[in-house]
Amino acid sequence: MFVPSILLKQLYTRASLTKTDKGLSFSLKNRLKDATIKETFNFEPSAFKNRLKDATIKEVKWISLDGEKIPEDKISLQLTADSCISVKALNQSDGEPFGLRQTITVHLDIDEAPCPEKRKLGICFSASPFGKLKFEVEDNITAPGQRSAFIPRDDMDDYGESIIKTRQAYFESATGKKIDHVGQYSIDPKALQGNIEHFIGVAQVPIGIAGPIKINGENAQGEFVVPLATTEGTLVASYNRGMKLLNMSGGVTATVVDDAMQRAPVFIFENARGARDFVKWIKENFEKIKEEAEATSSVATLTYIDHFLSNKFAFLRFNFRTGDAAGQNMVGRATFAACGWILDHYEGIENFYLESNFATDKKASQINIMRTRGKRVTAEATIKREHLLEVMRVDPKQIDYHGRVAGVGSFLSGVNNTGLHSPNGITAMFIATGQDVANVSESSAAMMYSELTDDGDLYVSITIPSLIVATYGGGTGIGTQRECLELLDCYGRDRVYKFAEIVASVVLAGEISLASAISSSDWVSSHEQYGRNR
Image (tube, rainbow, N blue to C red; front, side):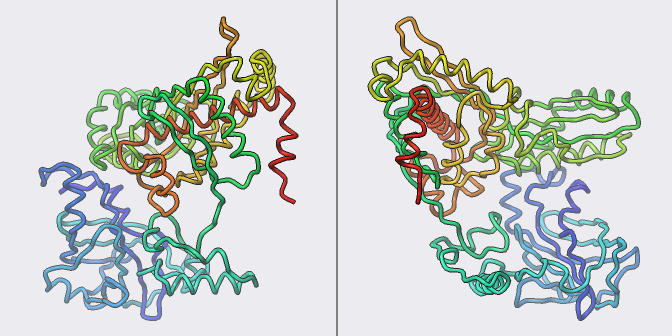
């Protein structure tokens, strides 16, 4: 069975080579869930993942330090907090479980001093269903206590009640303050593995509801009451007012028009011709690269690869569809696997980085506005003149004129948003529903447009070109976050387009509400009434 070397090295936990009372130790973690597997076994990637749940470490053939093999009787494996086995005993047994995300600590009974210089650590072992695995990494030996920056943790069970209380006590002693509200929570900490490290408790953010809002989407159809998590007074009231207005004129039409998530590696060559020829080869081998990338997941689909040449650098922008997950980690693993195949099959690459900063992860950028990152979604509505006058006390002409004036301000400032405050609603929904809130940086971009109709009504439309949302995975399954998604019927698979349409519709409601408040000079008085906490 073939596992690319670039992926195989991910079994080793970087910076885990540590001096102990009995010698040295380092950690191995089963991260091969997303490895690109070919050859020996003939089954689909989804079946491969199921096999990994039953992975078994069968035999440790050898471990070396700087090329010198360590005697078998000086090696033991810490499988759990209460279970340690010698290599000799392991090799004589039927093997030990090495499940997904499981960590094994390897103990070496040898006398080596801590040193900042890199040492070469080699390991060769067999594991089912992989067969023989061999790799070498470089790491320096750290002194006891240098890891973890003194924050208490438990390598075997870092989400248990005991270690959480230990960390809470450490935090209290370090700050001289008492933990009260932070330590009160209803979620199971053990369900948070993969969501947070060094867990001590929760942050409670108030949640209000706005709506209902009527949406005429391709995926979101009907009326939705929307949870908004915020501490900003007037925000919920403002969005609620905008929803009321939109409902009176028939609701919002929402459409997802594009879907893409990126990882952007860079390959470095001797000169520009090398980079140019490489891009030609990438185009010719796209189907094979696609196969390697998609073998890492039953969900990720590589749709195309953009290329951008500069100097002697070839920037590639891998574009994926990621199902109901936001997908940054998914596409990172998929691109990593594809690049592993590229590195093994193309000569002349002098250097390589998995991310070149060209995907602009968690940063606003012009390329994401133009090319899409996440979901590109548009929400639009035609608002009757009489409804604007009745609810907002403003004429459509006032809003349209203010929009054109504000467009000049947008141009002068170089802002990535021609609307007024789309990140307000997006952030409040992100917090409530367990989205990665840092993705507001990309999702903040928006193009607002309005025009007067022949009947004197107001057509409004907003396009969010890089809305990064998920209804499955990440933080969406945690406690209150899952509940809020379920209130919208947006938790789980085949829901992400529906959720994107709801978010865009909520954004439009907030835009028309604030535009009306500014145009009618009602903005300050609203904040005076609802937004001052004193």
